Image 1 (cartoon, rainbow, N blue to C red):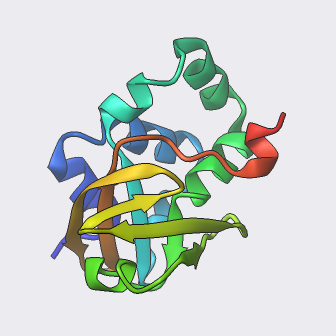
Image 2: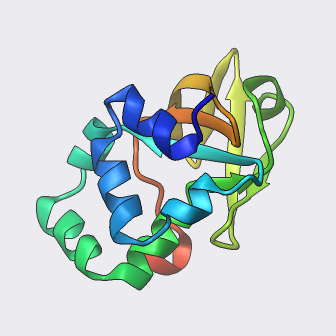
Length: 139
């Protein structure tokens, strides 16, 4: 089975996410043997950001790294786990809110479009928005 990065590349709809991961030098983190859960914004989710915002993030590596790490939670958190929990701690250090109502799961208000894309070092859940940690969003 492929690792999280290879799985994202193979899926074909995370090109912007993979480009950002490479720019932020997070490949090794996401290829590590530690179990991780990635809330992965699609290319369409990144397209919702103003182009200037995305371009500036790709130039501001510390901020980009914070945002990307905010999409990664510790452990292998599957969809049945997401339905049971209300929050998850991210590698960025903050907490994301998890809400599950009638089979619809949201992470900080972003809809989870697809769950449980398995990788050998964790799981990917597809989301429809880019999550912003409070300290980045507030600036």
